[in-house]
Length: 210
Image 1 (cartoon, rainbow, N blue to C red):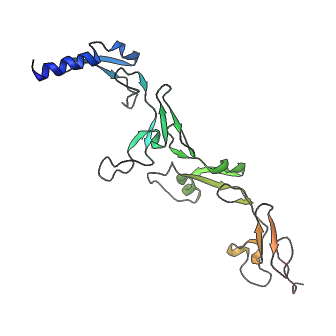
Image 2: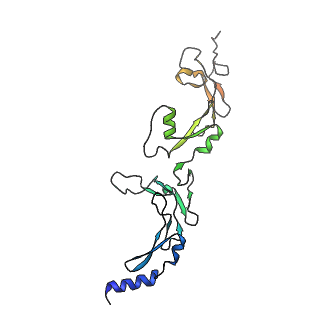
């Protein structure tokens, strides 16, 4: 018996001459004298099912957060669950790792949902707010909080303190200093802790203030 015939016999024994209906998710075609399943595809020509009999679902794909280079200058191959989750073959849904979300786990989660004190925006959105443009590969993937007025911090959990001009002419609110440049802010209460000799809700008064 020739090697080619032997391989065909082995393939037939393993895969059989029947596609078993391709699980109702594909069509059976003959390739190299063996019946194989060609799984159904979506509108973008991506396989919707996988497995020798199309018995498993595929999951949504997106540019990978991490992965191996596929082509020259290609650091973000398109893969299932963006390599930040596991594909549930029974449901075709991605089970995302912690801190990632989206149908394909393609977005970072904003910390603590911005504590309901801000909006969760992508880098592309942040650029638009600043009347700029950002369209790099991760423009819609990396997200952060745009805090409401009066709050700050990575999750908008810090309460800003009142501030104003420095009472003795130093750097105050107009240079971004909290508590008029004469105190430190307690971000849990939003109250100023004034340096020695200064007072007021925003440390706006000094011993020499009139």
